[in-house]
Length: 131
Picture 1 (cartoon, rainbow, N blue to C red):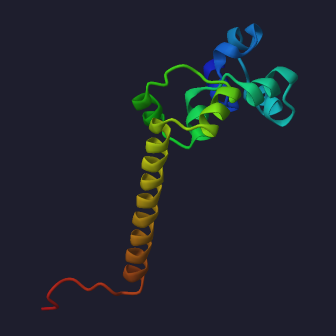
Picture 2: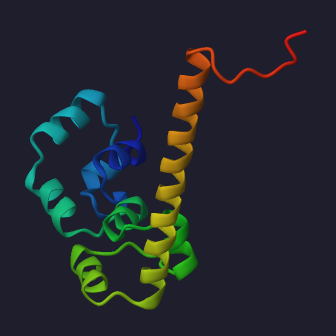
Picture 3: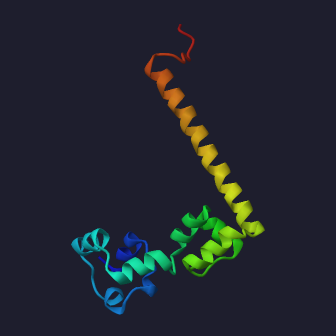
């Protein structure tokens, strides 16, 4: 697979990986081996960063769109993420609240759909005139 794909699967920023990783082709077996027994460079990248957008968003508890709205375009290190979490700026508070609302709405819809499926399964919910 391409190094970009392998980096995504490993949750690392490709630009921060060693040259031999960035320029070579990585097999699925190699990715599996890296995941099972990460070398020091991979463990350090995962621990300290810089992290890709998706990892930064997850660590901050916001969406990728929330990062974009806030103007965060560059990768962040673990220390930078911790600093934001320790003294959250207003944009982070707003985006975390927005994300919590999205999650709550998804749960509500899932519960509603489960109720509808249960009613349909048990023959409830009628509809039609019965003529």
